[in-house]
Image 1 (cartoon, helix red, strand yellow):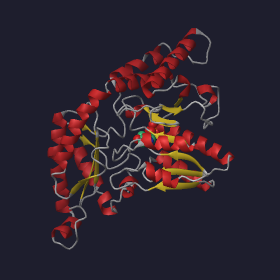
Image 2 (cartoon, rainbow, N blue to C red):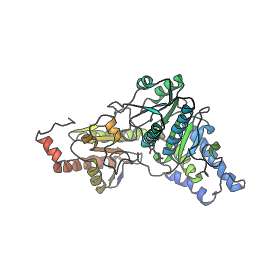
Image 3 (cartoon, rainbow, N blue to C red):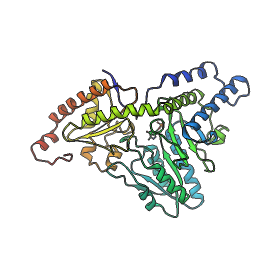
Image 4 (cartoon, rainbow, N blue to C red):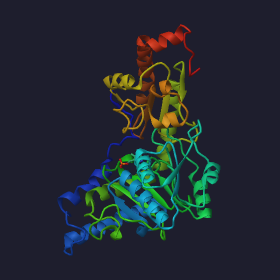
Length: 396
Ligand SMILES: *Cc1c(COP(=O)(O)O)cnc(C)c1O
């Protein structure tokens, strides 16, 4: 059996997203800046796509900027707020320790440029609170950037409350909502969000297409200089087919959101219950304030990398953290952020589901993972020490 359970890394494109793209490669291939018909048809299509995103997020078309993905949107949002902050001599930024690297590495860079960054500690349940943000705010704070939902452990942050606080204190609030959009309800107005990043390939759209939402009145600067595209804020000929695929995908995701999340919740709960039957295992992140498709579990005494390879041999595609840290031997910065010790953080398994996963697939995972965990434990000197009482279990 082949089971794809790494939808937080990327998703398979939906049929309707692919179908929405094809005409813009084959027939309407014009440049939206051109004045003749196939150019103007492309421009019209991009406008309609913008309307679809505006509708999905609860904003206006002029608040939508297309980018090359979530990473670019994160970079542009943070850089823009920092630029304004620097002009006003406000060079303090608040974020968290478990953001995506697109945020963390941008903040690292700003730190070398003289910004002071406060990284809020994440509680063991994978959540930060508005109170923590309130305590960290200073007179020179120019930006709060906190992710909507975490890409590894799936925890959903109290964004509306944090947004309300920032609004009250007149501090720009950005959220990396790449994992949230298309999966849980998000409304930028109700959630008091000034800037939001999303990425189409996380909800069955194409790779290389993202959106930065910027509330009217909030300033953004360019990362990419060029033509007058995106109202002068992002030069470069529009990725018309990509934008069309992304718009079809968001429309479909929002339309089916209720139905999909109900289905996913059932699958997720069965998967968590089934895997936690393995002794000395623990769920990472709050069970309730969590994306409907996310399961992340640590197993004591094993290496996540070996687990993944053996699962792959059984046809199961999963992850031990973010796609960005797979391939490196460092444990996940997210699991360390919630206080898991190194040796435990190494033994993690993330399964991120989509509505295409079936009950049969979940039962297959629930039957195969324990076999692989027991097999690896039997070979593990660490596990032997634990069994012989030479070491204490970290996970009871
Ligand atoms: C995937 C992801 C990104 C990066 O998006 P790309 O479109 O791949 O650049 C940023 N933040 C989070 C939380 C993500 O999951």
